Amino acid sequence: MTPDDLKVKILGIVGTPIKDGNCQYYLEQALQVVESGGQATTEMIHLQDYRIEYCIGCEACLRRVHKVQKEVGFDVIPVPVKDYNCSIKDDMEIIHKKMLEADGILLAAPVYIATIPGQVKTFIDRCRTFVHDFRLRSKVAAPLTVAFYRNAGEDTALQMMALSLLALGLTQVSFGASAVSTKEGMGIPIRETRFAVKEDPVGMTLMNMAATQVAQTALQMKAGKLALEEAGVSVKTGGWAPPQ
Ligand SMILES: Cc1cc2nc3c(=O)[nH]c(=O)nc-3n(C[C@H](O)[C@H](O)[C@H](O)COP(=O)(O)O)c2cc1C
Image 1 (cartoon, helix red, strand yellow):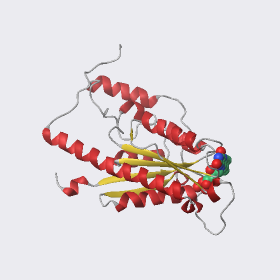
Image 2: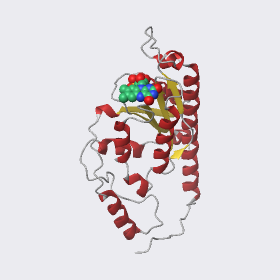
Image 3: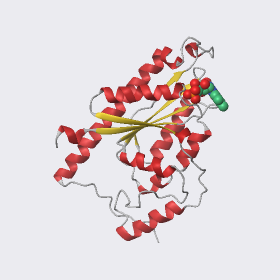
Image 4: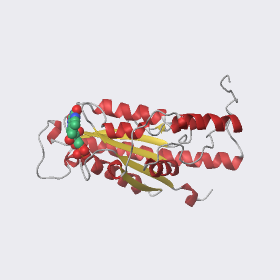
């Protein structure tokens, strides 16, 4: 294992209808923190740039996962399904590919009516294949959020994203971070600056901690995976299969 093997890629995903807003800025700052560690490269995608249809509940992804599991055995993890395992042909194909290539994911969304925007939920629903095929296992994640008021839905938004990332099989390494985009979280716009989250030292500190934890744990996770591969060690599942 060489230092060059130990580079990680962290994907930042921001979901808000607003381009170049506070939430995007917050994520960009987090990705800069990630890069400052020296061992990570980053990429940011904005869901607004992609055409993402609603999940139609067809369960084709699930059926394909089960079909492959019957062929290869239920102890094979991740399940070797084809790269894009969704029947809807839209830009989610590009996003799935980027998620699969990443070692870690930072998911950022603003608080909308005490939770996440529908756009982000739609994106999460379209990731259902990962719940069943375990292809995001051993990747790390943390959520970020921005709100107008202090304590006005930040925790709920973070928990929604955290639980969803866990459900998709990612390893949650931080509770996440939130910041406010108004003066001291009182709902008063700060006109002098375009990115008011900058003026929230608590939010910026929390973001710094979450981003560092994602970068560091992604690196440790990758080193661990490589070490296990080199040693020829793999964790068996016991091969339990659901009754047919
Ligand atoms: C539909 C809608 C609902 C919102 N709901 C909340 C809320 O429940 N709590 C809050 O503090 N801010 C709320 N906000 C404010 C946004 O969270 C805030 O303006 C944030 O900075 C938006 O980030 P962005 O500009 O990067 O999209 C809401 C904004 C919109 C448009």
